Image 1 (cartoon, rainbow, N blue to C red):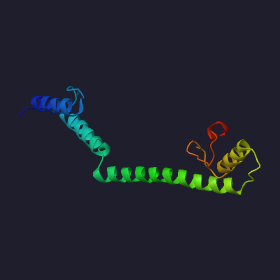
Image 2 (image 1 turned 120 degrees about the horizontal axis):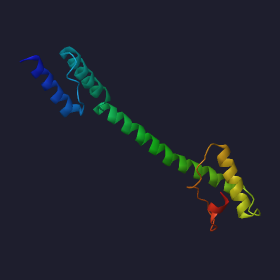
Image 3 (image 1 turned 90 degrees about the vertical axis):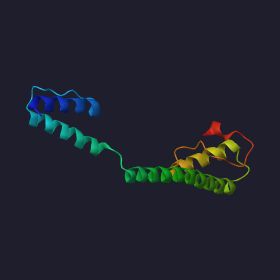
Image 4 (image 1 turned 180 degrees about the vertical axis):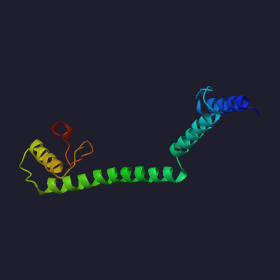
Length: 124
């Protein structure tokens, strides 16, 4: 096989596999190095089965943590609610609970539930 045929073959391979046009004016060895580099980059960026499994495990932990966070937040809010004086207006009680939860690190209070018929979202 001539050098020109090898260059043509490398160019066709690079075009098909990587969508890249090679400069056939370069030396054959340089073109071979470029194709080898493209192949090594492809291997580095290819997701592995173990990498995908690890990422899915991380996502599951995050989701479980978020759900557990909402349950823990509501349990804490209920304890605060029950410890407050019933003579306080509901909006005062809710604002105090919200402040306390924020102090504890709960930023998203959208899942907060309290044992009242009032719409508490307007006071959060």
